[in-house]
Image (cartoon, rainbow, N blue to C red):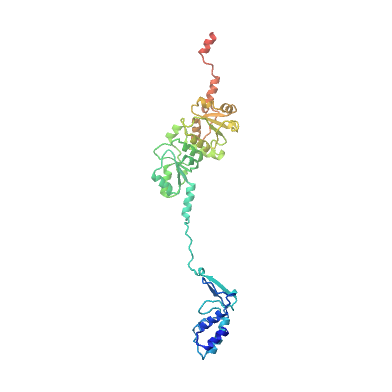
Length: 376
């Protein structure tokens, strides 16, 4: 592989591999061709036309009789072979452009697996979609443990808070044993959906493991409740559907102000009253100040039934009513919710204290002291 290596090969019976090693180490300039780092190994790619003679040179016997052949063979190996058979040292005669350096990391053949992530199956995706679309609320009756399991089995969601009542898509208002009750939740749900159902819808849906068409289970009749609240259930469901399509709710386009002391006086809480009014499509007024009342003729002032003197004398009431505003009682409000029909707010039957004031203004003065004063 060089002048020194050839002389050594002719003079002694030194194995050819050691001769090549010594020759290549001698030819390496440590400044320009440093030995490769111990953490890396150099792998050289040689053109196929050159050929590889590792097997011949590494295992050929070194005898004096064949020294010339060995010299010729060693010289050819130095010119054509890129890798020493004993060590992986790069030959400086080979252009560096054909050498590829591989680190120990490159020899790892087993891929590093990333932490597995839980993927949703098509079934779980459909179940999630169902839970978002089917929201079941019980009102007037309490759901049992079995009912809750049924709701889960059909991929629906049970909602219970009155704040969520406006988002209910299916309302179970009776279990077949108790009559329908005019609860705050029911009045809100009446304003938002026509799917007022009996418990049979849920039981049959769970039996068939799917959400059945609610139109086949609508609660269209409850004689006892209809007699108690003076309404017809089938008409209410129809009226509500029309009101939502026409104006966004039975009170769509109206402004409602609730007087003080109304909440809790034979009426729901202030929060529940607000939710009922907003579910009906109305805009809540928290003050009757002139800047807040946009359209007095479309404003309704809710009082207790009967209205109290303090409610009628609240600031702004006289001004709004004088401009066409309306005073109605809570009884009128509840009847509007259960029937889903906006009664004529100018009707004396619905106007509470305002109608009484008109009647009093037309009545003759009372007798008694005034008569005695005339006599005097």
